[in-house]
Length: 527
Image (cartoon, helix red, strand yellow):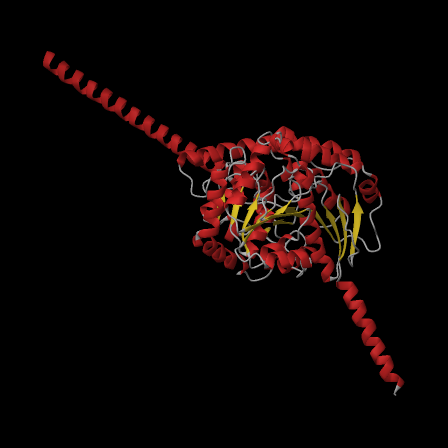
């Protein structure tokens, strides 16, 4: 065969290989919070880039158990206690709900202190150069000291919010705040609020923003200690994000005003790889002809640590709905009370998406975490919710309004209340019909969450920080046009004052004129 033919083929292959490698970017993902659910979200997000051929390095407490192409763990495991199947009922009851000071210490200051961890500190002092990073992706919650990485590495930075945008996250992005119809993250108000709810929502929003910014400002010391002097304030660093991905979607979380610099990617963590259930579990679910209720309180909470009275109410309610079966995720079955009903099967770990997708699963009992509820909507399964902390109250309030969920209070759950809730979900077709409608809305989008993430991340790398809203460079009172309204009010008051003076002078002139005329008349009469 002609040697020039082989040469041509070799040249084409070499060019193709070079082209592929040149299109791949190097991306640093930073997920320093030590909650398993947050790590799962970050892991799936970064795997999306790795599948596309980008080289990703990921800082987290939960390194992968198996090798994944183009994915490198920068593990900080062991630096903080992991919240994985060990979040007990007592911890939940003492969780700092409503205490911004405690929240910031737990999820802000202690996380910023990890900047001195050898893995992270070495990355700060010796960033890779062959190739260097093209993009930084960092979790956008309360450890805002990590925003210094964008400036330090001289690359664009994308924030990732694992919940809907919270009150303090809007202003640095120049994103509109709308307390009139967007409930705050620390409330359970509906989007359609009455006057008093709107008043409370606005006041709470401003208080939360003030508290957060005041407490976050002290994270500057961690930036100075680890990155060196010369960096701006924490608030100014938070304004340097080129884009923010938000784990929400309007079909679930309602309509919110978002600038082009805020992109919804709700469901990005759902990577349906068609994983198969174990043969035993597959057989058990297939034989659940009367239906099955799936029970899981996420990757952190241990249901077996709940009060015995609560678990006994669960047992009694499950027994009442037999022959419907119940599948429960329980980390340590030895800690469960005796007397588990015959229609209940427990497992230490379950592939949640595959379980929810099974045709015989008719209801999902959940704590209301956003990721779990998104998976339930993905599979079209209505829910019973027991909110415990954080955004779970807000999430379940939204779903309850959409009639796809029944909410119960774990503090006073009884056999009767839980049985009624289970029967409502299992027997009232309205809940499943509504869930199917919302599931269709969730899927009806121009691109998948994975495709959306890839496009916008690559867009930021190509075009840098051009999506930033001009409002981010204005003070809050300028954004709210308080200076404009103040000027208008000043002009109006000044005009009224001038008018008052004119009227006063006019009346004075008329009075003087009338008095002069009167005096003149009297003078003539006297003559």
